Image (tube, rainbow, N blue to C red; front, side, top):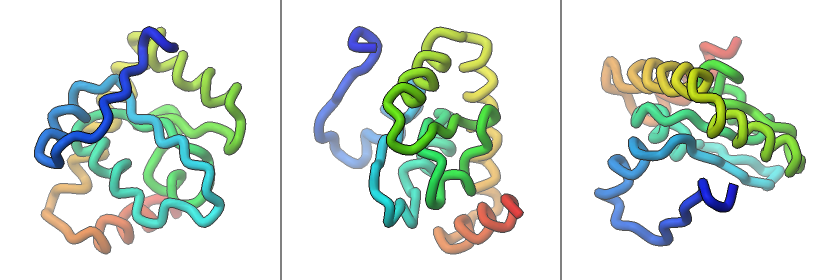
Length: 128
């Protein structure tokens, strides 16, 4: 993966949407048990049409439909994370399906325009 991953460092906020659109995938490799309560980066990625790989815990499963708009990996499993990243990078048709799913889900977060709280409520409502 070393030849496939680029670490960009700090970037101005206004450049982030373009960078996200150019990414093959966004990896949220968080290890916190408290969780990513807001998952704003995941939602921004979906709006950009970029699929997300994240751990299968806390709020991530409410936003990511495994195999549809991203992938969920077993928390703390470097091997599972590696498999998921490799699958997206080396299976072009699978990657295309995930990008389409992410873009479609991203549109649901924008239409109609909604607040962050409304987007989170919608994600939880759709999960159950």
